[in-house]
Image 1 (tube, rainbow, N blue to C red):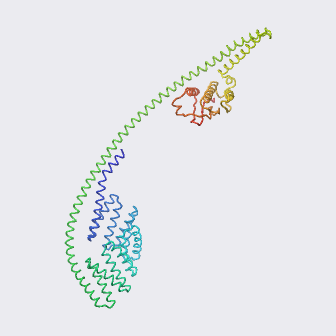
Image 2: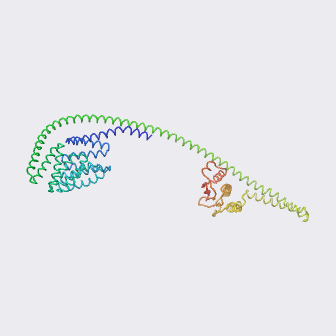
Image 3: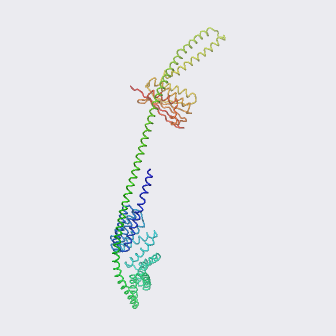
Length: 560
């Protein structure tokens, strides 16, 4: 559901983002156009609009381009300090998004502002810094512009050799880029530098090249300056006729430039009036379009809010339905657990009754065997003794009676043993610990399982019933070990605590999976639970496949 909402949200907003980016680019180009046309106020307004819209969209790149554009306008106006402020702002923004290209352009602009302020060393520092950066990013246009500026800077500092060298590099690269006017300016600067270095031949060569380019491009002011330079070079060589000829050409161009300038001023005034009228109409149209776009944005925003609200309502309803169902399932599970616990308690109570009946029946059978059947066998033995004494030892009948007497002795011993087992004879006579010692010895003597026993002094803290039940529990556990565990050793620990007696029976057998045992509980485990429950105790089973089994049982005692 969240994924669908995100897709719808992006789908709704993508046309709006595209329109905003197009609007930013249009405004930026308009600002550049105004700057090229020397309409500096309109250019600054356009770049300000770019900045405001870019900040609204959080578009850092266009914020940088706006700052660079405004700085270029202030350079045109000769406001180097203001231009430098905008360039530094562009540098900070460029560094925030790691845009090296725009950052380098801004550093170059800082150098230009220092050159305007005649801080020549600072300007040269920034030019040299950005030359390396522009070369790294292979930005030929910026390198060409930079080399021309560096040549000009060296000339202003009186470093005419460096000025000629940098101007030559600039002319080669600008010629490749077909920036012919810049090539002409570089040639003129080379001519001026060689003139200062007293190399008139080289100076004349490059001054002529500069004039040819300016004349072909109809750049009258550039041509006039080149002619003035040629006149100065000829005069230095005392070629006064040639110098006068160049001076006349220069003066003629100056007159043409003056007349053209006046005509251009009239045409420019007319153009400005027309441009202002068109700009006003354009601004009206732009404001109307901006207002319409705002209305569309509001409608789109309301639509998105309604879609989001609908998704939230659907989500809340769906979650509520799921919660109600989960609560119902939980209540059903709790009821089922309560029923299972009730059935288990009833089953344990029934088993406790069965176990009590078994113990009662065991006592009755033991007493009957010992007192009644044992007494009868004793009387039979007595009669056999009387008969045996009356017969001769050589008589075969005497031998048969003696054999029968031995069998009676064996039968009497078996009856006594069965009676003691039923009554737990050692337990009855000596207590729980000796009974467990006796059980341990008998099991160990079979060789099937080595049993060890550890106990501390219980000091008669258990009742006869508790001792009997604990003894039966140990019997049951040892029996299970012999049947199922494949163990070689078992350990019985019986210790007394402050308010309970702890029984631990552990083996080194194959163990079992507790989850499987809990799913299908056997009669042995149910009997164990019933006996422990009868003693108000609790027990814990720790086992795993291949890890043996440990069973711990705690029986509360009365310390009063």
